[in-house]
Length: 234
Image (cartoon, rainbow, N blue to C red; front, side, top):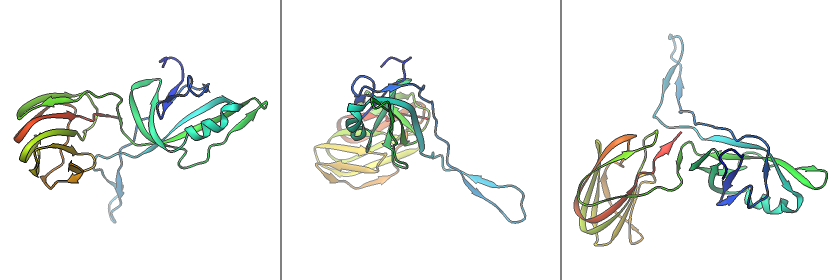
């Protein structure tokens, strides 16, 4: 995509090149708001605010899209469901979105030849890297850098030799119990540890990676492993 030309990729298809879309308005830059709980106390002026460092989902709107009349049916099918949204002004990151979830998409006929419309994407609050290179590690200490803006929840693929495996980042430690001599996957975002299609028991806390320098410590029966930071941006 040309960084100076309004365009986007949805479900792996380029709006301009693959779907003949003409986008007349510049795409917006939107960041998520942190979620706050607000409380009032009788006898005390003002409000109390509490946050758990999580963020609100938001609507990402793309306006003034024009398509040829003969592409209408195909575009309707394309702009639906869930997928990854990549915009021309932020090509190395994607948003996890659902298209037109909260309101209908209206197509206005222009001279019987074109249709003009706007698309609304309901976006998860944090953006992720389009192509993330995994960090390889073995048993011991591995220092690494996270380029993101908020705490990330990593994903691991570990070749186990059987037995317990302990992973530590910062103050958080996670132990995988009684693994077999096979590949183990650890998904800290979804809270799952799997091996050969079956869940494994764990103890401890799901790991988080902070922006900047981090240290991964691995102990136990590990032959080799890979870690995807899953770095996130606002």
